[in-house]
Length: 457
Image (cartoon, rainbow, N blue to C red; front, side):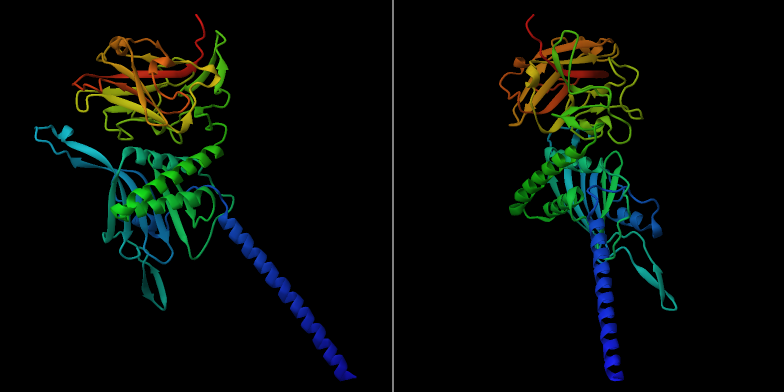
């Protein structure tokens, strides 16, 4: 009888242990899955954590990037393998010419992708006795580098993808932790910075994949390079579309049109009841996240190989005193005293824009010059999806010296044989590009670029 009771107690105890063990395993599995899900979240880059324990990040960036001026980069810090970086930058090279040139004319700029990897892991440790160790981290010059030249158009499309994701950077709800993985740091000019731990989904994973493919481009042979570059452009375009879809109401673009909270919309009716589409009113640019030079490229910040500069050197970068409407206008400096003897700024849209929407048939913008400026030709050019470009020149070179706001109205048919329903870029330039000759310099202001339905007169 006692033997049966003992056996029964053992069976009951075993069953209870089994249930407890299964519950514990289930709970552990659930916690692990929650941890993995939490690590797969977020669908954005997170703000870089303050501080730099042991100076590790500083040592990595110093070793792989250094003091070179870059447009953007991705730095990878793996747990157990050497650190590496992918960089997009401009370099100078000497122009071959039989004719004597000034130093400024001789030095030309080109866009370069660089892949840099440390020969050994920068994170090192040293024994301090008693079976203990401490970090031994310092910059290294033992770095392998691979470079390849790319076009400016390629560089700007990659930049658009980088900026699109970095502008969504925010502080995470929970820290993302891990042991075996990679911390990625992303940077774009104007001090946009974000990081992520081993991204697996969403925009961070796509941006990492773009960075990885750019590294492959830098290391590839000529036979594979063009295919890899096309893959990069396709991925960049996909990232831009998804990033734009996530922008909040303050920065979203409807049909490529900037829209500000409580200020403007993409369509409104003016005093003559003519439907108007705002291309750019220059109102929503700021001095930190969305600077005016991020959208309107120039020769100073973006390196478009002309002697133009959009915005002021010091904040506020947009003009806030000389304005036609709202609170800001765009300053544009030109210097045609040196090659290429014209100055240009451009805005490129990630997707083609329909300039015939809402019955639009006329382009309107406002220009203000200065009495100290040098007169010159003022051009507007638009470029369609097929890269066909059409240009219209203002009839009066003295518009640049007129120190009051002047309305410039251009009927869209004047742009000739171009697909107005598929516009990808707009260029504003000063100087004659077809017959470049030395000219002058100056500063003008632009405001309220609109598409209107002119209607019958």
